[in-house]
Amino acid sequence: MKTRKIWANLGVEDLERTTKFYTQLGFKPNGASKELTSFRVGDDNFIIHFFLKEILKSNTKIELTDPKSGNEIIFTLSAESKEEVNQWQEEVKKAGGAIISQAEEFGEGYYGFVFSDPDGHKFNVFYM
Image 1 (spheres, rainbow, N blue to C red):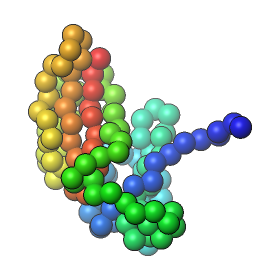
Image 2 (cartoon, rainbow, N blue to C red):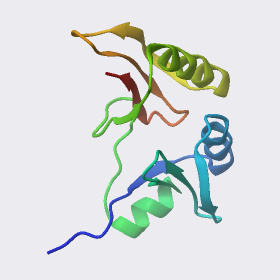
Image 3 (tube, one colour):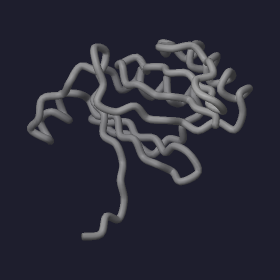
């Protein structure tokens, strides 16, 4: 088998809030409908679709976990410097995200922080 592409599908409560949050962080819009809002991320244009939770549950026939109380995946966003990590942290705060862990060094040569979007999806902004 050969996989042509991979992307993420996440469930959210409010498409307008999600669109505003990720637009403020500079994610590139990839289209929207009454069921989802979509963005491209990074140099390779990784796609993240944010579906209304009920639509995603109905389409996949699975129960979604509550990302505010746990997480199955943490996306990592690559930064080019410690200063850029710090800038991301400030932008996340301004956009209404929650800082899970403050920017700090962890291990030799590693610097980053973790945040969640308004629905609880976790991201690590990381400089190495």
